[in-house]
Image (cartoon, rainbow over all chains, first blue to last red; front, side, top):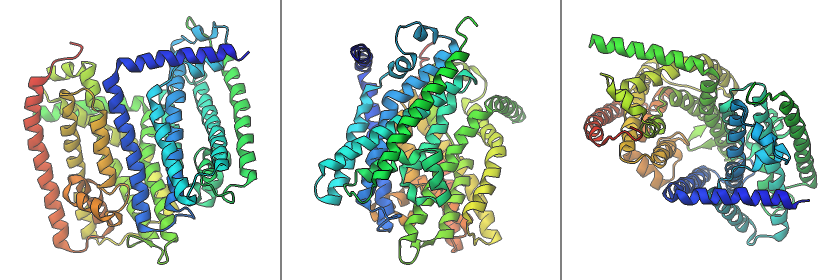
Length: 266
Length: 269
């Protein structure tokens, strides 16, 4: 049952690799820019901790884990989510979503895997390295159970991000011209660069429950710190619950939106 | 001169009309300019709170608030983004049409820049007031310091505009301008003082910051407006340096523009 979706994903991946191979210099420039972003992130941590020992309970090494998480999530978003959602918006606007709906595959699945920006994997590798280094500095080694917890929390976070984007894209069925809605996301995401504990209480609450940003960067970073007291089982369970809830909600919303779609000739 | 003024005011009207078409878009763009300083304020405040003297690089929490609040406004007023647009104009061949006009393409971009700031004011203005109520910045500038600070902001805006434009001209040689633009913005963040007050920078970065022009486009006008530059001679020296960089960038633009035009071959022409 899983064979066909996997085969499809493999096909799209192959096409993307071929595309990248055609513009090698372009890719090199982009990898360079991506490296610079990481250097900038690390530089800001350096500047902050040059002036203080801890920020809302977070030390420099701890913050490194968060820098890594931020890179990994930002990278993941740019590998799969951004390119696919941009294409959905375009398809809905132009009416070419017809070609997706006609295929004998789940439409939501298909629109979510059509584009893969392969070279962005660099971000994930670099981010993981930085996180691992931060964890190593904290504990002297990288404990296996925190790697497991880290991956689990990241997956939950990534699912939440995906659902958030799917809902933003679904809005396009009602408001056709919303190409720039992704700026909304990046503006909110910017706040996840630093631990949510630095914000006032009302904002922390908002960023945890109303806009679950905390589950995307702060909590995975807490899980990856290797300190089991930093992350309670309650947070882990809430994260999983949140991911499932968001997934169900966004799929439902997508299906409602789809009913409004009137096609190319309308 | 009168013809130029008429042309520019016509361009400005066109650009404002265009901007108003994309109201939602420009609101979203300008939101980033609000979010980024606020996030940095939050982290610096948290850093200060965990220091024994409740300060960060010699700034108390209300002063940190004033720094990032002023940076928010100065950053918006002095914004320039030609490094992001130029290569697109050249790649798509739109530059050709602009070159056919009997007026430098720069005037159009300048009109666009002004139009953006005029149109967004209706949104960012109230937001600034709201932010001021939320974070309670503390100012201690005298009226004279404040007036000189305003002059510094104007100079900073012009400087940033022309320097950005000069950097954008690199697009005539390579249509891949992204990396160059990113480096410019990165430097403005780190050694310009947008990320952190210059006093907070570690030694080596501080040395670089003092040599490069970036601090005169952000940190310097902000500190002037805050009343942090109390020695008058220092204030005037800073204004002179700004003026010097402005003249230098104008000359650089003139020279580079002439060479760039000779290089230009319309991509899709």
